[in-house]
Image 1 (spheres, helix red, strand yellow):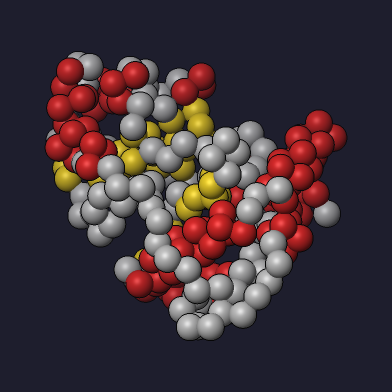
Image 2: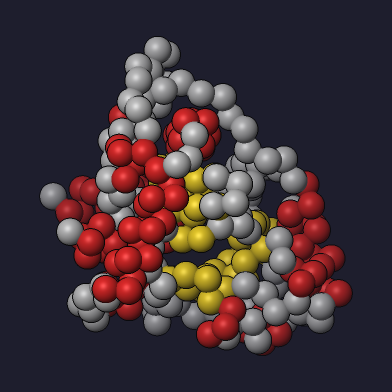
Length: 243
């Protein structure tokens, strides 16, 4: 059971941690919330933070001496790793001046990245921090807005998936401890998470809930965050390819 929780991204604790009640306005798509047990209409309460824009990142990276792809790759270190998925790994930057962003590196070997150009990405969420991409360097490196929190998963989740490795007893106990902490969150924490899913849907996205690393928990602030999502068009193509 513990292994299934980690490796599928399904999080049954949400059903235990909140009391399900009616969704009066029917705003939240059931597909997105079926694994949460959330049925509520809520208001969006994302933090506004213009300090994480592409322009702000450009100023900060130049101050830290990141002007090329090789400079960017200097941040790829084991001690900087925040989490991993099937196709990518996410890292902190070395410099505290870049603490508001993270580096996402695509692991797929067929992708090549020779460009030194930091290209601005279209930011559909604007100043709302959804952990969205704000820049790319070639086709393997992406700069994302950082959201503070701990992945609702084991460390290096993709290692367990890629190597069919069982979750250890210690990892299972740590996970169960996190479930107990989340169960104490107030209803507004889950309402806020439902808001984020609703916002994604309005913008034409769905949460990528296969990887449990895509759910971040801020235990101090009692917040649940989405940090990865797919366009509906891409999701439909992926689903069609599976059936």
